[in-house]
Image (tube, rainbow, N blue to C red):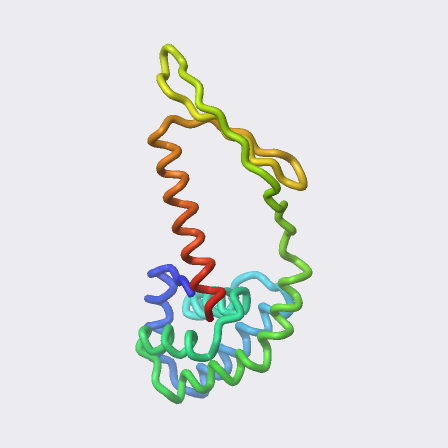
Length: 165
């Protein structure tokens, strides 16, 4: 599960919250997620926890992954147990809500490409991604294509990691 450094920093700050306050904060976070509310007003610690919980629900993170993330943020065993209890109870409802709210992405059916040589630009790749919706067309030079391929490989590695959890 990938977490922004600022969110991890915020989770570290949350580790200083007393148990009874943490219980209330975690309850508020999951209530906001279930009811599709905006971020928690005047509770910056809660907003970091909200982002973490939303991502955990979205990727259906395992308790082991969540424990590791929270341990990295300095949470105690008791705090982690409290979070996991709330997460286990609330995650199915939040995931159900997310499944209804998340947009459906087009499936890639084919990729067509051709290499052109333009007098002023040099070699140019013209790429057309055929989907079950609107096709996507783009032109790029070899360096841009190498960057695109690298980004797609990184995305593939991240998807495979999440799938393996």
